[in-house]
Image (cartoon, rainbow, N blue to C red; front, side, top):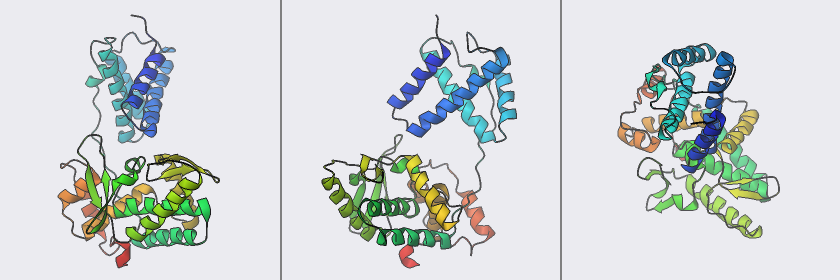
Length: 313
């Protein structure tokens, strides 16, 4: 059977898109497969792949080890290629997956490095200041960024969780507001939002709906993408969220990222004595996930790891 490696990789990436994988996930898979292509060109000067022997598997393992210092980076590239070979097996191109024989080191979890509480407060204050000093679409963008801040520090959401949230994912109950997360591999679950979220959300919702009417748009997503003149589309990509944090870092002269702010939220829950089972549920991780790294980080300097909801500050 004649087949072309690049064509099959494109088919594989399109399948991932069809399965609902995010733009960034597909982009990362593409980069990981390109690493494999580079290896083939370096070793055999072409991209023809009639077989992939144990010797080649070992050579690729050594190639990755020399190229990347991080075992997690190696693992990601091995996993991408392993899934690609599974795809080739389904198409009866390969009788077995040669990557199954490739041993990789266990995943290494980095120690959490949360944004410290004084910087969390400064971030919120800056966002509020921007809202007060702006108008029109610029003001709406700043209001949107406050909602992003609350979803991360208030509810511990990852940027991938926020990308396609709809207004319907914000739920109101007798105790305030919650955000519902539709996880692709588990039942939906909801996370309580802090009291301070209420007024910011209501102000954002009113301004957002007013702007949509003025531009004759129908958008269901909670967040939006915009240029300086108009709303372009509903939803905000993980990259769009990260760009808003780059802007904040420049003005605050801090190292804060969406990830470090999420870690601050997890530390906050630990300070509030939320039980670990509930925290893991809100994080969207498996029951076997360990919070020990967070606990150990707190033990190093408890006074430095004090976090609370902003209305209590």
